[in-house]
Image (cartoon, rainbow, N blue to C red; front, top):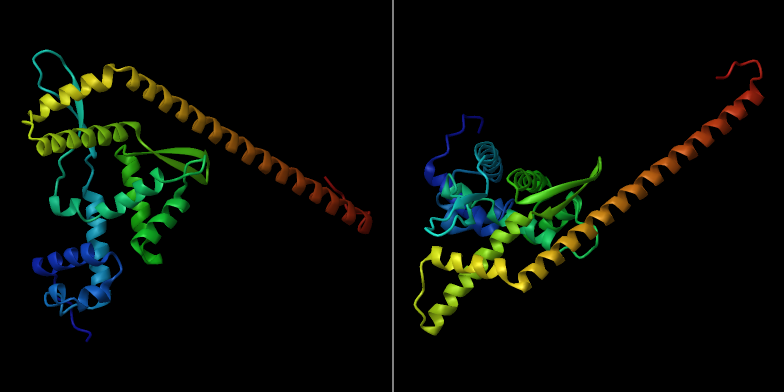
Length: 273
């Protein structure tokens, strides 16, 4: 006790990361009691694990500046079509550290049923319930939410100074849909014994189908109408908040005038502005 703490070894860091993936953030006692991780972490306490995880998280947030999505030109002799594909992570190990939190954040937004989009408080509540996070770990969700906004996965709209709303970026949603449809097509062909084409060939066909059919145009129009409806609802909510603020200000002014009148009656010699 009281001596200088030993530096963390790569084996200990690997065990900590694997333990967090298995048990979740904040479950330090469970990680230490698990024989798969406890042997490597036998010299560490709950506090040691918590502090080290915070340091790993802070270092990861500072170093990851690449966007999640990148626009990559498709090598095609006939046209200049483009596809949206996920960018390669700078560090495969770090990429997996917060994947579950990112997934829960996106799930919180996509599963939101109310007319107005979710705010940060609603997203925090959803992620904490799904991931059994401790109250002290809210900073992680907040940091990941801001990261997803910065890389363009999520769009933040300002309804008021203290009430931002969040939605999935159309670019990200389109990329996910394209990736899912391509994957389903490949899997279906494999099950039916059909020879799979190359990814660029499949993507090229998918772009032609999705870009030219009447159904696709109708779907795009429906999305545009939905976005317009959301924007209108947000504007109406902002107007209502402004009206409430104005009413409160008027009430406070009336109260101040009433107090001034009372004091005038009690202190008639006092000069009032």
